[in-house]
Image (spheres, chains in turn cyan, yellow):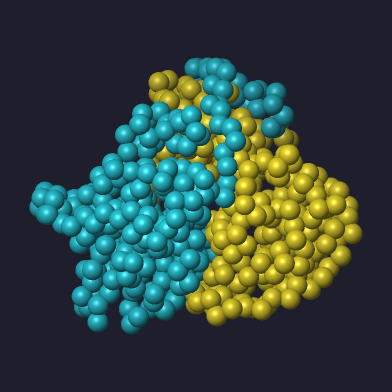
Length: 262
Length: 320
């Protein structure tokens, strides 16, 4: 038996940078450095742990859809220990929405071949958390998402999903799409050996034609939603700041009472 | 008038507040038709009617509890086919977003998540979102199909608007896919008696400055005096002082209450991403240079162990 795991990862603008929109209201990627989405590191980690704990032969492939620089995200995942990488890059992808992204990911996952897809719970830029569910819908396989614990055994995946009202145990037969939260287990740091080894690992480059996708199905033109306006939030007017000299609590209560919170 | 589907979030028939907020927004777009699923669905009709639902479609099949997400998608799909709505509104919970996304794909419609406002526009509903850690506000429309929009809690007032609320059974035939992911166990979260974090009108949060699990009692006491939910920064959660389910921030929960009180929280971008849209922000921190003070309406530079108990005592006195 062998197990093929595809980990989807995203290259995102660094949240500590000054993020903006470009003139066409897509995310301006030129002014801010990018990096592997932190939440996807947990996905890579869980895939590697599943591989390490399995008696079967397991291959972990990392997949990203993004511009040239997105290779950095793949390199990071490879240096953590993934076996190989796939980079889907095409000028026509510019401005693709979540629905379009799920199409590209699903086509690439099918082409790569898979038993299990592992994703982060959300990207740290868009934060919607819907792409894993969309990919499962596209692939027609089980969705086992938002797991804080995950295990694969006997051709099935199981895990724990912590919701607002309850904590649930889930189980599904493979093939399946899993997403994991930041509670699933801390992601490892790449070792020096891992970083050196990553340089020799294969990174396959695919474009839309390799996946049989028409340009009009993705990009801004193919998006099913449209951003009509984006405005920088006006800076908050400077608030009142007091130093506590024994009366801080009382002063704060006075403010809250004035705002009718008390 | 056009109909608008509203997905009902309820626990055994008790409708949660974000759904009532959705009914307020739905009325701006058309006549709300509510879809309530699972055990107790029929019991939701009364409160939904009081808040504007002209019709309530219900189905109490066991599949909604026994399998993950997909049965709910298929029920909404059946409701869309039955009603032909101009929009589908769903609460922006983690599950709500997954249900909405799969529905959108099935009915060939665009999806907008985490809206903080929805209004009628010339080419359909316009959704406002707050992005990039709330540093930008965008206005978006769905250009293909029916507008599927998930809306964050506290985005609209709950308003009474009595309507017929006629209950109709929704007929759903589940596909093989609906039973793909089995729920093999369920442990209800233990109730703290406090409001749910994402829907609370007031949130009191503690961070690194709280300095220990036992000290969170100080934060909880203030929260209880105000009838608030308790939040925690990632630093406090990672240190094991408070449960992850209470984490506010980019990798935790996003909150947008009327009042947010941050105690011993410096205000890293990770945390700000989860609370910056709060209406009124208050911070208590020893460090006058903490970035959280850039966001506040009112800040106290001081030791939280002096300021918070004093505030709690003052609140209790005033509330008498």
